[in-house]
Length: 156
Image 1 (cartoon, rainbow, N blue to C red):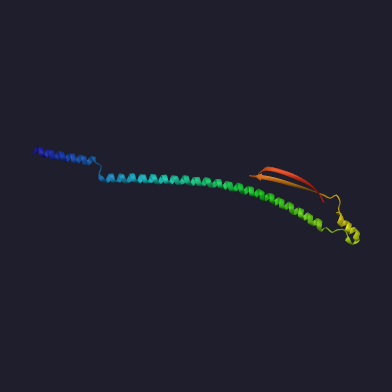
Image 2: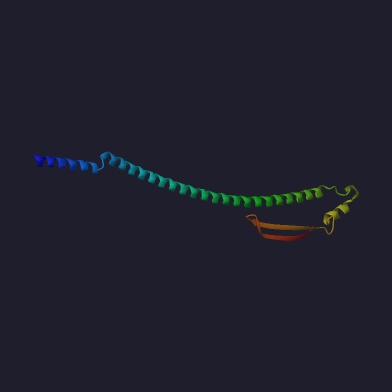
């Protein structure tokens, strides 16, 4: 009975040692869940980093587009200002012509028919000349890139 008891005792001890050395099934399950959770968080973090990079690219693209629109707007504003100046110049010229045309002529009742026919045959004022200056300014991005001036002398 001694050896059989020793054998049973030895087997019991071996089982006890093996049980203590092997991790309990609950710890193994918790460790597996923890690894899965860490993997999920790592994948989500990577997805968020990708989203951040994509949004930063979108921001850069939009800033570049905004800068381009601003340059185009500035160019259009420069053209508009040049056209407004040109319109104002033509308006002044037209007002000057209107005032010249509407100024009363000398007393026509004192002219006889022969003098009035001669008036129609030749200009009322001799040697009247007009000088016309056309100035063209081409700009790009707010800087003058081409400028030219033309002078015309017109005799009436």
